[in-house]
Length: 165
Image 1 (tube, one colour):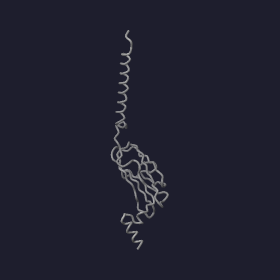
Image 2 (cartoon, rainbow, N blue to C red; image 1 turned 90 degrees about the vertical axis):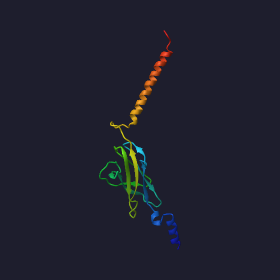
Image 3 (spheres, rainbow, N blue to C red; image 1 turned 30 degrees about the horizontal axis):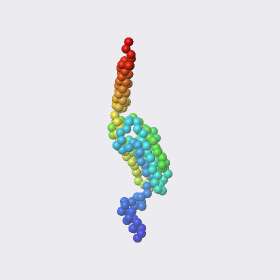
Image 4 (cartoon, helix red, strand yellow; image 1 turned 180 degrees about the vertical axis):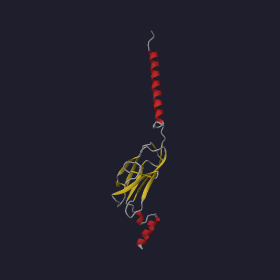
């Protein structure tokens, strides 16, 4: 009777004892969902420790449904990487094309658990033909204009302050 009552109460909050235990959770901390990043962002995967959880887990990464190496960020055939609970893995993502991308992490928290994962959709901002962000030439132009304006102002001020001969 007590067990049945406890199960009914847990079912009311959406967590049965078999569902309440997840040994470890992997989260994509960066890039963040909806974030706009440069062409070479760094992904950060975090292994969140849970009560009674495991110490480490093997995981795989995909970028736009293509496997990438969890240590180098390169595409192609990869081996799963290990991450310890409470640790972060930093994965460089190389030369991404401008536009929408989806990074996915997949792992099996324990032998008797299903495969779980986290997905993050983000955007890579466009670059110019020279590989420079469009804001860089604008910033350089504004800086040059400021220097030219300051030089002209100083030259005029010197002429005004110079005594007449």
